[in-house]
Every structure is written in C-alpha cells, then in structure tokens.
Length: 187
Image (cartoon, rainbow, N blue to C red):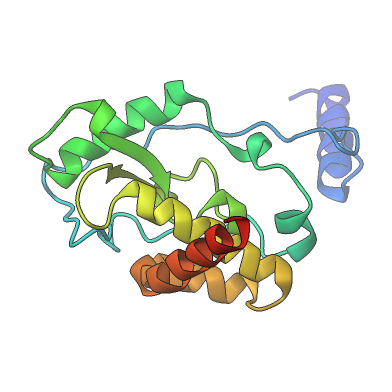
C-alpha cells in the first residue's frame, strides 16, 4: 500500500472514530434497516391463547423516554407494508397457523410503538390473529390504555413494556373498563 493512500485511510478512520464524520442533520430520521431474518423451521414457534412464543417474539424496545413516547408520532418508526407483509408470510409459516390468509392477521408489534416498541425488529413483530377471544383488536385497546398510563405518569415506560411483552392480557380488564367509563361520560 502506498504512503499517500495509507495516510488518507488513517485520516478518514480517525475522523470516523472520533465522531467527526458526516452526520445527518438534527431532526432528520435515521434510515430503518429492514433486513429479513433467516426463516425458522415451519411450526417452530407456538402461540398460546393470544400470546406469541416468547422465544420467537420476545419484544424489542426503541425508547423508554417519556417525552418521545408521549409527544411524538409513531409513523416515523412504522415499517412499510412491503416489509411487514413479507415478514407476516414468513412468520405465519413459523407459527404453523392453519389459516395462512394474510388478511386474517395483523403483523403486530408485541411492544407497541405507542409505548416505545421497536418498529422494524422482527423480534418485536408477530402475526397476531384477528379472530379468537384474545385477538388483535383487543390488544389494540390494551396498547392505547398503556400509552395513556405512561403519559399520565401512572406507569413507567419500562413497566408497560415489560408487562405487555410478558402477558398483555393482564391489562384487558383495565383497558376495557377505561373504555366503558369513557362511553358512559359521552352518553
């Protein structure tokens, strides 16, 4: 390697390691890395009574910052449907669901974006059925309730994230009770 090239390489490496490399302007979104994970063996993951397999879908956190959770949009963290649909096909097979119709599932974030969940990490996404007692529509109500709890200061983001990742069904009664009370106030 010639001396001039080695010198340029050394300067470039030093700048990059010291943080002086080109950075995105403040407020500009970092690009999402949307690499598809290696497929698991079909039926290697098991959903049990509305909960994902904790080995296949343990959840992933983007932030625990209350300001970010309560005063920002989740749209910038939501991956495109072209990515989630491919992942949904792959995961429906991995979960061994008999119904393979994409419309029967929501590729849902286990730790919802509304409470700081990671938008594109496959460890936080799973094909949640629209049918059954513990379906995607019920979980959506839990996600909204948890967001309200975090933003009201009644629960820390970390507690909400751990709770929903462990067993989101534990919050159903509170979420539905909150919704019923809101309806009574309107009537």
